[in-house]
Length: 125
Image: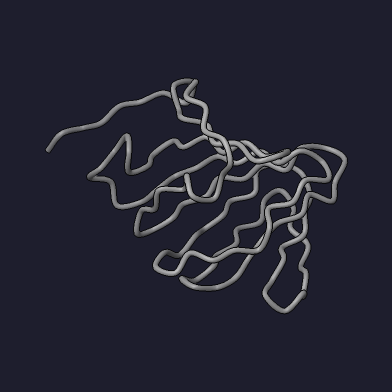
């Protein structure tokens, strides 16, 4: 067994307007991993539009801020620091930061998924 070691500072960061997504564990850097782990920071007022992950479930651990969880049916649910959210494979979801501070969450996606298709810009720190 090989133990992989990385640093948060060296993570690849994907960008959308108002949103930064640090790829902590992902297929490009850890091809044998069984999950993708990402730390997402959304600026106040930013939106992660509704989308789905056909094969993967996601678990979000909210670290800071407040936002709305957006569903396929226009239903919204508040999210805040300390919440843990699970979205099953194929479920439509999105997020709108409705707070006055950054909304920060850690997401675990399994099976692993390369998130580049959801972002317009990739910046290797």
